[in-house]
Image (cartoon, rainbow, N blue to C red):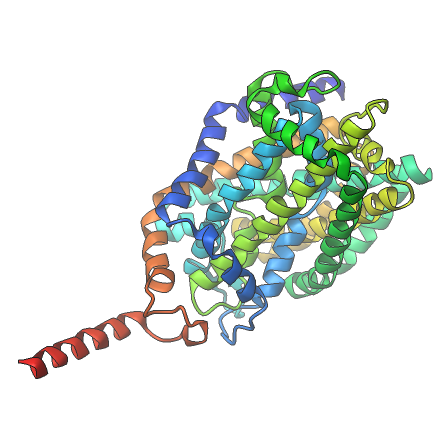
Length: 475
């Protein structure tokens, strides 16, 4: 197991070198500029999340689609992932994680747009979409679509399964003395019972769990930040300073070279918000949406809540606790989170335990759906039952595996999923611009979202006709 962990670490380091970081961050920046900073529409996007879309094209509401996507993204990456990033890359990794999320909102917007634009309806009326359909129908690259689905199917057992199960089992064993296999067994039964109902059952469960867990965790973090108020300024300054110069962290903090700070910040940012990885668009394609841009904006809010808000708060909580309590040893992974939240009696450990369990459980549900759609694309519905069986068994296996090996596998699969998805976004950027101009930039088009069935081209023709009539009257 130690040799396997070292091998996966080497592969992860190779995949997460400068080329992939440049591709990921470069895509974020390129799409942000090319689409005229869609992040500035975040308030409109949040409003649309709670505005009912009466479209009949879709399986679930936009809110439930977002809740399922958030269930998959708001997981251990927001807690353990941030702690691991700080342990391996120093406090500055928090800044790069946050920046990746801020810029990644444009990429998540683009993913959601293409998902709805190129989605297909099956014979039984179900909507299917995601990067594989954008690659196949938009670019004619079915071979690359197949590769994406293969990477996605494998990734579901890393980022969406064993990592989550491992984190929960480790916490339960340390805090309550519960054997890891027992926690794994209970989690397996719970996830399996929800998976049987398909996307509607999964989205319904996520719609109930996600709002509760997010609000509960944010309130807990705010309380801890208030308790550490005297150290918040120093924590923020340290995060920003060490983002550029890791040595600024000083004694007691690790981080090493700048490449490690950036690498772990960006990779954990991707692990957390999945912007650029291509997973969230799979469920976005099932949403009821009258036009691609509407769902794209709703999808964009996922990255905002996940990384810009929750990951940033987690990072500030950990770093402020480390500054306030230099006598405590803060280790990587779950141990770091336990040490940080444990500095606040009663509330801290409770927030961590409940937050981690609900985050992990919801992530397992969200990623089980992603895996099912990838398997369905590769071999049809006949393989879904077999996939579900293997998926729930992997939960139990992940509960007892080495954490380092599991994290390294997850990082590798994240990278392999991201590459074909990012290529599709770049190669289809003209489609993104065309659809955004049609539905978002044209002030006479669809700024009034209740009129989204109106044909924009027809409106344009009518405006030109009215203009000609006015010119004739003047003459």
